[in-house]
Length: 384
Image 1 (spheres, rainbow, N blue to C red):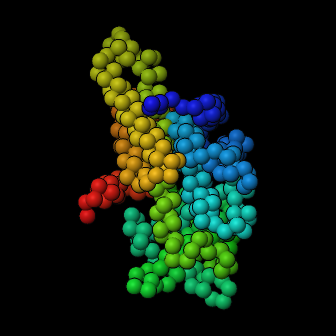
Image 2: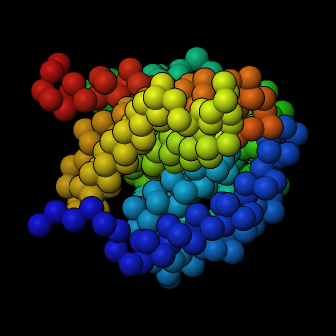
Image 3: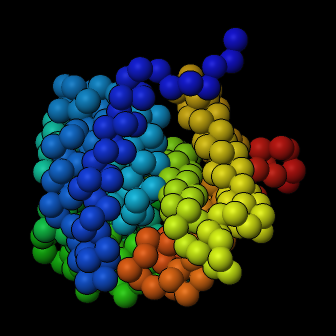
């Protein structure tokens, strides 16, 4: 029997996060967005709720939940604001999850409790200025000098990398050459404040303006040899698996934005009058909102399906790419339609749909572009 209803614990979590988003985030996030200011108090609120520890075991201070619980939280947060949602997504999926998946017992004991509690944030340094989607073209290097790695290079577009509570960035770097040729890429933990590790000023971005994003540089940056994360030479493969999970999370975030557009348009269509009638009475508006709801609903089913396979331990690469592709398209299309329904007000930052429109585009780019998702889906279908 197929049952798409959420279980009691999932539904309770969803409702709790929904209430938090509506009461604590919605009234103030517009100001943070316009000031391009990181919302520390909101992050502390999410930390108190245990959201940063949702998919981690209790032994590390986590909530003992699973990745689907994280996705539900991301969807509800993104219905109100994507900057807050991406802060949670990156903190869990990219900051803490690599440590949990591949870290040694000592590394987990050292770093995970503070990351799970939300007292600290971790970041994930994969993308480079000249690399973009070609993550395998890593130029950052790490060479062993005695019992230390010496790191040189740079990373770009790194979320959560420069906040006051950022404690570490895990970076991919070339650590040698494979026996058969090609780059040996490993992952190394770099604590914040390490000499030679510089965080550039924050980017001026089109969207996600209340989230933290920086370029990072490493100049003879030295960290202990034991900061190697996982197996040497397996860093690229490790993070590809992390990105598969992350794409399900980004799909959930995208669904939240798409559904938030529906929420705002339903409210506005019931209030705004034109030519003597509320605009919600006009079929043109009704059909546009109906199409928006169809996109959000379809995208939600896609990420539910991917998360279901992930939790069962089955291969889910194709489903993750499908979910990410469908959901990011839904977010972009819904943001465009919502802005059209709001007319001139949709172009004003004081209205949520203005933020939604600015935030939606990056969802078709981050954690694998739409073109990359199509490529991955084709490969999984056996097309080479």
